[in-house]
Every structure is written in structure tokens, then in C-alpha cells.
Amino acid sequence: FYEMETLQSVWKRIDVNSKGYLDFAEFLCLLFMWSSVGDYTNFFDRPENCKMVGDAFQAMEYYWQLYDTDNSRRFSYDELVRFLAEQLQVMYPMCLETIDKLFPTKQREAGVELSFPRFMHMMYMVCCDCLPSSRIPG
Image 1 (tube, rainbow, N blue to C red):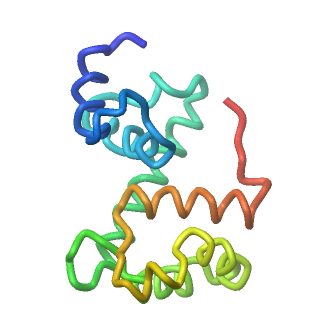
Image 2: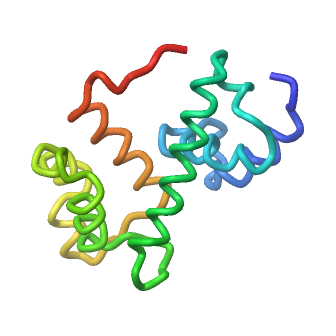
């Protein structure tokens, strides 16, 4: 890894509780934020994987803004379900069980909303659970 100062700068913004390590959602944030300071060749050997990751994050940001109807920078359960039903129509019925595990009724009823990092992690888990063939090498 050749851009250590850049990594440390981004790390400080992501590791907000100063644990000294990143959980998976924070790692996804690191990848998401990295596009503004570097390229994905620091993380992936294959150029096609770099492009795929960059394109995926651009799409996630676009849909986040589109479905965040109150511009809170958080997803309510209703906003999340609308996104899933409209954008992941084929997977929607299969992914509800995963969504319910990751965003339980008790949290939803308490008014908890999803942050972007949590949303990214949830989409990763939905893809792993509902599309096992979505895992890529390298």
C-alpha cells in the first residue's frame, strides 16, 4: 500500500470511535470514500474488479439520494422497502428475511433509521444471501 498518508486521513474519518480497526461496514465506507482520494488498484489486482466496485458505489450513492425522500441521509424502513421492491424486484421476496435479521422490527418500531454504511453492509449481506454466485475473486 503506497498511499499511507491518504489512508490514515480517510481512516480517521471512518474509525470514528477510534477502535483502531474497521468493522465490515466501516471497511465498505473506506472503499466508498477512497474513490475521492485514490483508485481501487490499492485494493484489487484486477482492473475489471476496480471498475465494478467503483460503478457499484456510484450506483449506491445515486439510489441512496433517489430514495432518501426526506433528505435525512438515513433510510427509514419504508424508504428501504421501496428501494428494494423497485430496484431489486427479482430478489425482493428472497431478501426480506435477511433484511428482517439486519433491521429487526424492534429497531424499526423505535424509529431507528439506516445510515449509509449500514445500508452498504445490508446490501452486501443481501447479495451474499440471495445471490451466492455474486462473489468475485481477486
